[in-house]
Image (tube, rainbow, N blue to C red; front, side, top):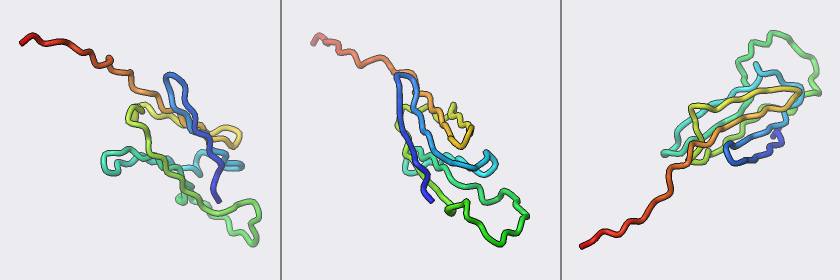
Amino acid sequence: FSPKINLSEDENNYYIHADLPGMSKDQVKMELSDDNHNHVLTISENCNQGNTKKYSKIECRYGKFSRSFTLPENADINKIQGRLENGVLEVHLPKLEATKKEQRKTIQI
């Protein structure tokens, strides 16, 4: 199972939308890791949900999933937010404020 993903951005934010029909927020796990100085966001199924039901047949699920995304350098990793509503996970990643553009200055010799 590989959920459909949409990546988008506007002037101030990056967005990740994942179609996760029938899943609750307790069934979804988001983790941030550091891989060779790149921040990686991983969205996966939370296998530790404590389901004690025994099923004789399951037709609704397509299996476990895990999707990873290397985040842009200007994503503010301290302000990442996620919400799951109506089977759509929306991850909001604010952009860091742009630093002032490099200014050139002539130095007299």
